[in-house]
Length: 179
Image 1: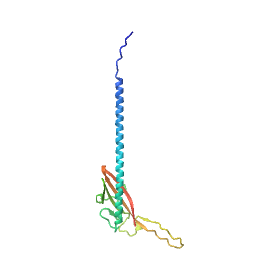
Image 2: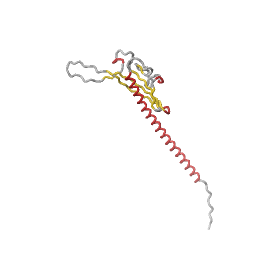
Image 3: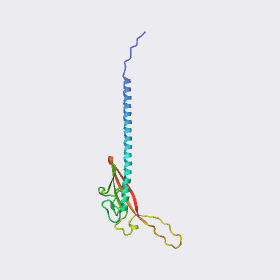
Image 4: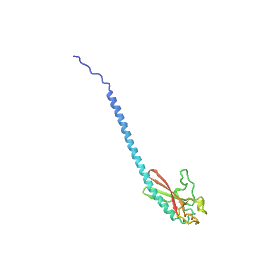
């Protein structure tokens, strides 16, 4: 009977195990990074939603301020202009936002400005110089009756800027009708 001598081990198993452990380590790191990105994205979405809710408070404050304006042809303390202001490429008015009224909602600060949508001030012809909203009226069916002009409502553009945690910044614009 012949005795066989054991073959020399080459260590291939050790190399395979190390490669598999490396692959598993990289997969675990990738999974951890994906979970972190998902958490950051959901946090950013929560900040955005909260800033949009805060902008509603700023917009409601702007609406109340417009209703309280008595002289629409005079500018008011850095938040109201009787004519449209120059705008940047995004359509936002180029104004001093630090002079605008501030409303604090938790960790968010909302500032608003309002512009009357007119080309000139003082307004001499509302229909030609300003954006107005006309409300259609029911008319008489009698022949020969002159059609009545619909009443005009003055239009204003309210712009709200909200700043919050993590440098969150939200801008909204809305038309306000008065009259």
